[in-house]
Image (cartoon, rainbow, N blue to C red; front, side, top):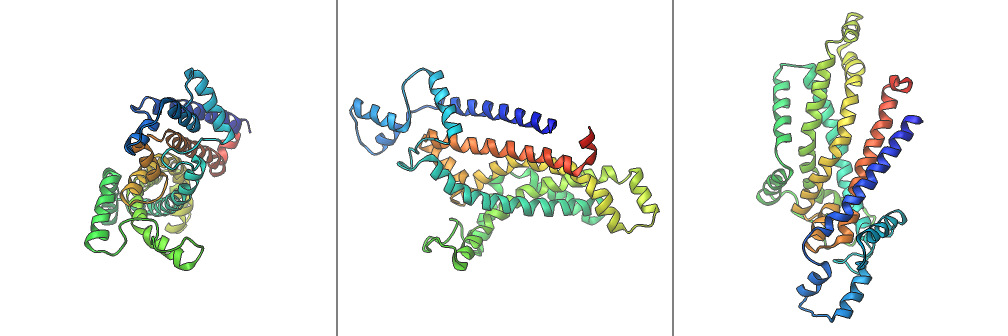
Length: 325
């Protein structure tokens, strides 16, 4: 409990630090969002009307420290203001709707890539030096080296435009009404294949390389030699002796990969016009929608911190030696 309490305090401090950066970063961007919104519409407002509009969006003229304290208070009360681009919708509604799509896409891609990458890494390490190991290792390194935007464009060009097997955009058929039906769910799954393939391609290489290196480092340990000397099957030794212990650093890399997943999701959603958090953030940056930008970055920060905290807890569950440390 003392360990978990220390980690909670650390993550709370990290969250406040990230929220502070989140407050100042949009304010360093050039341009007034309210002015941009009305200038693009070709509308001119008198100064008093413009000031009233700024108050509506929460852009209060005052000392920066006062704005900062108001901002921190709004975070912990859940009031993130109203979106400028999607006015009069509140930021929580805009991000909440997009969060459902991102969780579905990212969650599926993470589970599939982690399971498949870990399994390929185990087999590659166990068959070290074989043709299978060479193909998997080279392919994993190549997949990790290619940026997400390049992978997205290649997958979209081949399977979306050239072959025409899958749709090139949207999360579902626009002609369908959103409903909990097999027809609509099937359309969502069909439209999500290319974005998920892109994210899995970006992620699977890192998990494969990490698991392979961890396995190779453990195959020469005394307990592996002892397990083989006892006559245990290769499958039993590979999974229950080597892979189980090699899994600990891989779980750690899963939390680190959340940042890669979020970055890859942003690019992927923009390329495929997917209505997730990444696409919302891109549109908000173009519109100088400060409330949405700040809310989105807070969600990304909280996701990273929660993922790292879950990894800390899972480490204790996976390695009983840490309980007495």
